[in-house]
Image (tube, rainbow, N blue to C red):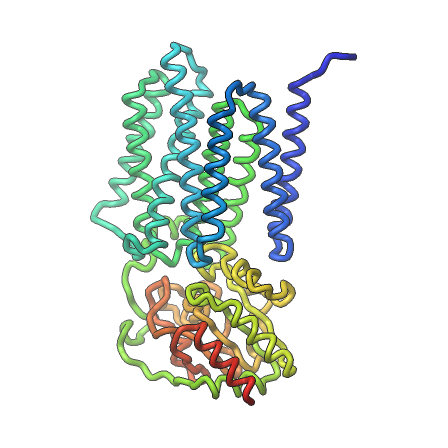
Length: 467
């Protein structure tokens, strides 16, 4: 009666943490509940970490407490200092650090067993090697993704002769080293394996163009989860296995959603070197060659919007760059007061990471019921008076729908061109991540409002107020 089953107690705490994880993931499925979902999942992780520290009988907490304090300070500063435009880069860094942590856990366990002369079972040895492979690939691949997003390295696909052949041979060599290490653990060979895995991660990401970065980020997120699950098997920690599996599964599902939104297979994304050549859809002129466009003044844009019956706003990465989300929301509220029905159309791959536009508009307190995804709103464009495209490019390019010669042909787009009038806020006619010209800019019903999106919206708002 007085016997206390400590292992059962820890298992119960882990179960509570898992429930928090599942509830958090569920609430992350909607922009309206995403913030609370993030807090719930974070609380679940805190519970799991505390339970693990108690379960593993940590004697000295000094370094752990110091790490928590330093990490909390760094995290708080980054959360406040990082701009929304840089959020994808931060996600890439998080993925990479998660992969690196898992690979270091595997290395530490292997080194400890070799130093102690402990014989490892086959399943533990294999799991250590898998964790090292996935973790190292995730780390180096995420660093390359960060570099591309930050434009430290070329955003275009980087390829060289026989690149795929070299990557294949490298992968075969990695498998050979894994087979050797499972039979005969050796730290020298293990270091060679780690270096090879890091190189493989670089080779897997550098040939991927900027247009595919949302898919790459979600895929690397899945990798980091799988690496964490592998670390859980190595350490014999059920909680880490479950958490890693949840992250891995969520990342894979999100990757599948992203590839579907682009009408491309994952194999095509990873090995297609999309965007390697800057060409224009069909038989149009090369990128940069002059094509006639119709420019519009801020005052004329104001008149079109103020006297419309309906308007749809289409945000893109340019909105994030200009930090114009608050001005866009103000414009929407202003014309709504004049009787205009306003909606926001969100493409799944708008921006540089999944959900980028949803987070951006949520920051400006745009009502969640005004946000519509592609399937919900695409049929409404043809009956809409005015569409305002703010910084979006490839996701509204009609060439993806109408031109079989376009590199993005078949990718589902927002049918903005079918509206009565289209106002495009953009700095220039430069192509988007896909590196191709946008046929929308040259449509007869399209008017280009060139300049910084934030400044342009401020002037349009002022013009409407003067009507």
